[in-house]
Image 1 (tube, rainbow, N blue to C red):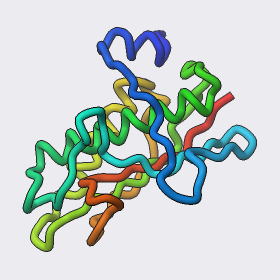
Image 2 (tube, rainbow, N blue to C red; image 1 turned 90 degrees about the vertical axis):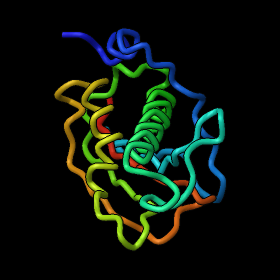
Image 3 (cartoon, rainbow, N blue to C red; image 1 turned 120 degrees about the vertical axis):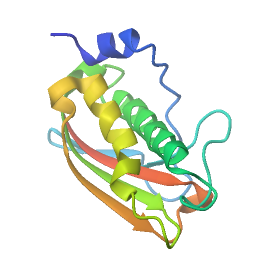
Length: 153
């Protein structure tokens, strides 16, 4: 059985630096073995993916935006586990929010961009409960935001 750290290396994934909060909240809160990770938007070093899905952003790009959110979540998981991703025991739940136009209904397909990444990195422990919701607006006009609850040692 390979570890999340080994899978990340095998997948040639480079984790970003954890994104600092832009308002009055913390990036994560630990309560016992559960870590609640604040919503991570579709930002990367190039500025990320912004806009309304179904209008400015197509399905494929929206799925990539959700994957960016997943990468940012994993970076926060690593920070919450003091640099050791192998301490993650389970991805319990993801909450996905898609800034969707009025005629866009493939919200679950978009959030699969983050869900698929969790399974790629954590294997069966990456399978999770999930919400996938279309919303009118997201902070700073980002296309997607995803939050998470994980179990870690």
